[in-house]
Amino acid sequence: MAHERFRGWASRLALGLLSKPNTPKQQKQVTFEASTLETLKPAIYTTLTETKTQNTPGVYSLTFREMGWAIALHGGAGDIPITLPRERREPREAALRHCLEIGVSALKAKRSPLDVVELVVRELENNPHFNAGRGSVLTNKGTVEMEACIMDGNTKKCGAVSGLSTVVNTISLARLVMEKTPHIYLGFDGAEAFAREQGVETIDENHFITPENVERLNQAKEANRVQIDFTQPIQKDPPEKAPFENGDSQIGTVGCVAVDSEGNLATATSTGGLVNKMVGRIGDTPVIGAGTYANSLCAVSATGRGEAIIRATVARDVAALMEYKGLSLQEAAAYVVEECVPKGNVGLVAVSAAGEVTMPFNTTGMFRACATEDGYSEIGIWPSSMHT
Image 1 (tube, one colour):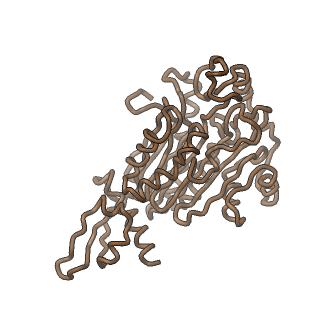
Image 2 (cartoon, helix red, strand yellow):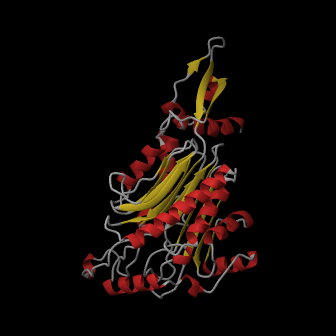
Image 3 (cartoon, one colour):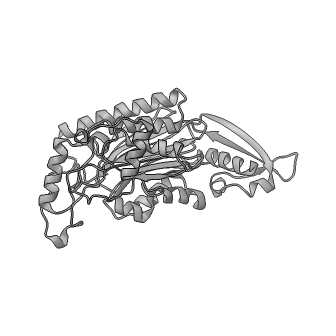
């Protein structure tokens, strides 16, 4: 058990040498026997060179640089045109900035990463400009079915919910599933009943049905195909060219990942699902390892076409490439986004235990924001080479 604790700690610190070596928070040195060295995660060997101490043969000394806290969040990825009208772009950018400030303040106040991601996602759920909570898109019956997931990296404890139509903040109910039940996942009537038992805030379903999403549903029904949340009005295609017979939207999911200065990680994701989706459809967001995942190395929240993300187990694959292949966070996330999921289907935000941040996407754009303890921050929609 001692080796396991050391292994996770050492791996987190070692990974910090991969991306921002010029901005360390502090340095730490650890000395250990060669037998312990053999138990370390592969990431150690890809980032550090072991040096024998001069006085004690067979004992190694490694110096790690710790990187500090970091946070990243997203408001959906998809075919977002550079010509997106200002009235649609600016409110979302302002919301991202506001939520980023909330998260940064919470991290500076030493709130746990789990508290931070829940707090940020609650704010995003309360904003009608995103496809979660207040702004959730509608099913083919004109109803709302929301879902969410939260996960703690250190313990791998997690909670998920689906099929909610009255819960104001589904991410908080997901956390209650994690903390108050022996289960991981509750859905539909059972999840609604649990919400009432726990006394969480609920409201009439009409609260979530916005005029914009009613119009979005009508467009999807008329076109009989995918409606993409942040694009211009869709064109109707022949049935054989329609990606989904019932039409849907994969865009607008919200998520947040955070790491504190001790390397503790957490992730949270929330969504209303797909426009014109079949009643009962479950997407990637609440599926552990698909849209949401955290362990002792990284925390990941994905957004995009749920079915593609589930097939590729996007979030878990990022962590697996770090754990088993020794890739950096950026390398692992880039490989999954570029090689494992068809173009135009996914984006993600991720942080490592060492304070790295990455926000890759293979769609036209992704609403995103991040900040790190060393002072770096970013709010963007399109690739950095494009004006935002």
